[in-house]
Amino acid sequence: MRTLLLILLLLGISSSLLASEVKTIHVFVALCDNQNQGIVPVPSHLGNGQDPASNLYWGAAYGVKSFLRYKSDEWIYVKRVEVDNPMILERILFKHRSGEAYLLADAYDGRHIRSCIVDFLYASNYQRNQWVTHEDDSIPFGGASDLVAYCGHDGLMEFDVAPNMKSSKKSMPAIVLACYSKDFFYQPLLNSGAQPWLWTTHLMAPEAYTLVAALEGWLKGETPKQVEERAAQAYNRYQKCGINGARNLFTTGFN
Image (tube, rainbow, N blue to C red):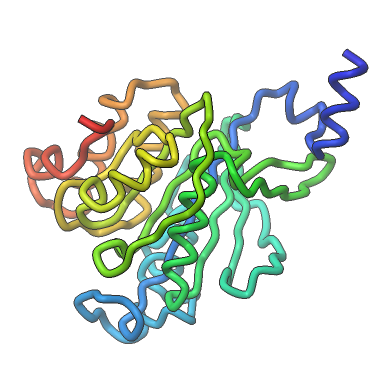
């Protein structure tokens, strides 16, 4: 036991966090950007990729930061975290109300969507571990997370990425909320060895209500198909697209 504690200290993981078996989730958000992404333009205050405060995917009502902080009953705002990466305009730490999970959300400058996607893919391959200090804990994120998610425009429609993936005996659970994400993220996630718990087959709005619903199922230990159904129910609730349409939008796995 003493050896284990020494290893944990060297790795920066507190024994209290390990003992509680708290899960960690890292969410990579590429801010919506009318000028720098191949999207159908949205109103300028929603599509300014350098202004997180009002951005469609971050500070707007259903953006990741606003929805988790003000509209979700499951997640509690902990703090804004300082970050030395200039491409990340805001980093927020949340804790699940059950106390069983932490979530780190990063808002990437919309001009740097490629870097956001690459960082997500590295994390899905258990690379680029990151640590956030809160109270007496050093909380693991990045490639040390238990689940990673990407929310935003599907930049792989416009460019290719080729991060250096390593072989791994584990499969990171991954969520990709972007248009046609199964088509465009299929090979990159296959290369990373990640397990896609949720991705999409058509155009979609990558807003936070779908993410929150999916995470709730995952935290409860549900199967990927149950998580998929949760996502469809949430998407239909907010988009009013019909439950059959919502079910056709989401899928899981590589088949």
